[in-house]
Image (cartoon, rainbow, N blue to C red):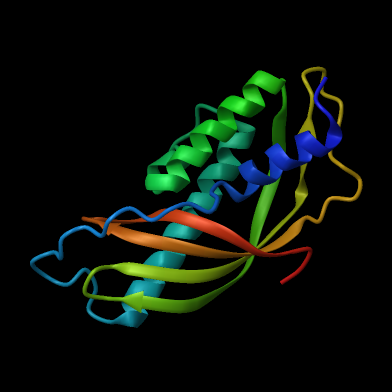
Length: 172
């Protein structure tokens, strides 16, 4: 059976949905700017991230629900989500409950290219890790609140989550 520490690590990766990764070579500059200004880019990134978390929460309650949270991911973020799902399935674990976005702060944006960086505070207090028999194996000492740096790229016509790094575990 998988240890509680391993279960928590897998669950945290799923809750966050994305992890640190190498950034691929930048895409060629689009013929027109992705966004008119930084405010528009930040608003699009926040809308994308909130929609992603909503889809992730839906997937936990109904794996066949739409939209699929992977539709909001690309690059390393997508690879990590796929790998995490496979690891959870192989370990017979599932994550139930909802993660809440408690705050989002704009950090940087290139409106021309569509690259955006946000800091996001996620609270996964409402989530639990369950084993195959439905027993709660969530680590009692887990830190359910995390501050993330989330990077987005423009993939016309959408903004997609490319990567995320945990800055602070245990608070925002």
